[in-house]
Amino acid sequence: MPTETLDRIMKIAERPPIVMVKGAGSWLWDRAGTRYLDFVQGWAVNCLGHSPRVVLDALAAQGAQLMNCSPAYYNEPMAKLATRLAEASGLDQVFLCNSGAEANEGAKPGWGTLFEPKVPGFRRVPLGDLAAVARAIDERTVAVMLEPIQGEAGVFEAGDDFLRELRALTRSHDMLLILDEIQTGIGRTGRLFGYQHAGIDPDIMTLGKGLGAGVPLAALLASAGASCFEHGDQGGTFNGNPLMAAVGCAVMEAVDRKEFLETVAANGSYLAERLRALSANLGHGEVRGRGLLLALELRGLDAKRVASTALDHGLLINAPRPDSLRFMPALNVSLDEIDQMMALLRASLAWR
Image 1: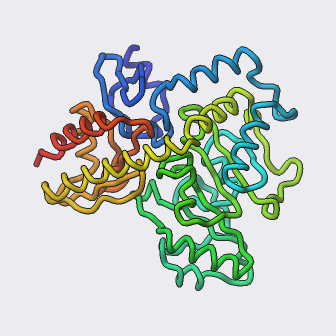
Image 2: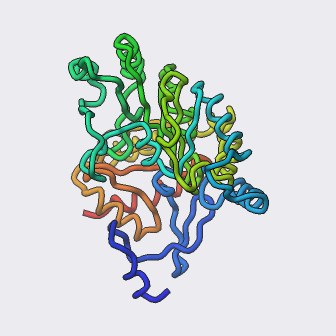
Image 3: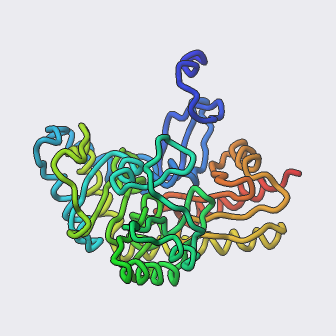
């Protein structure tokens, strides 16, 4: 691909001057033939790694049958996936869409300083501060929305106790609890949904990223009492199309199994232990997160520069904050690949 071809791409993000051409499992290759160990996986999107067989098979089988009959009609994969998600979550109705942002728009979230104009009416309070939540409630408050783990902020957990207390508070005020599980859902934390660790039930939940294992698929789930859309309130040309819904069904079949989730939890614990040992040895900070969504706090190093150095060593990691590295490998990452990542990470942290 000539260099000038890349110049035609709008500069909406800072990207290194490499072009990826192939992926398999935990590995990516660029057009020069360089191989990278991928612990970003499309920002926790590729829950089964790059080009997993179950997704390829689902695409081939459904593509040969029916790709898109328009959202004006029901289709079988749409109904199958909606049923599977509803039964797994305990929620009642499902709106399938194409991205986590779209799912969150259906739940009416705020978006910080991004993507103007904002949905009005959202007050922000510190994560984990129940008293601040209580102070922010007035007679017009109808819901509280949060992530069980704030991924893009740097992997900060709300905490199981806080989630239980928040659920009790919202119920006492007859308010909805909305959980953004776009990053924590579909097995990322070692349970199918992150909120299950706390033993609570949300009224509304949004899913994305891992639900499609690499294809554009997301979902908004709601209890019967919270599902209030009228005809025309939501829609989209590709929403719930058979091709993507068939992939979602295949992903759920692969991930929603006791032994698979137990392995995610065990490998997450192993990765966290290795990161803590490395941090203690090199004088860095805490390891945050759960399952295979983890962050390492750095001391005296710039995380963005470390991530750039790691790229040069053949390792893809993410720096969501200047002082933190984030690790989001495939849920089926092997212990050997974790060990390889740790060796590459140590080398990447060695510069001064």
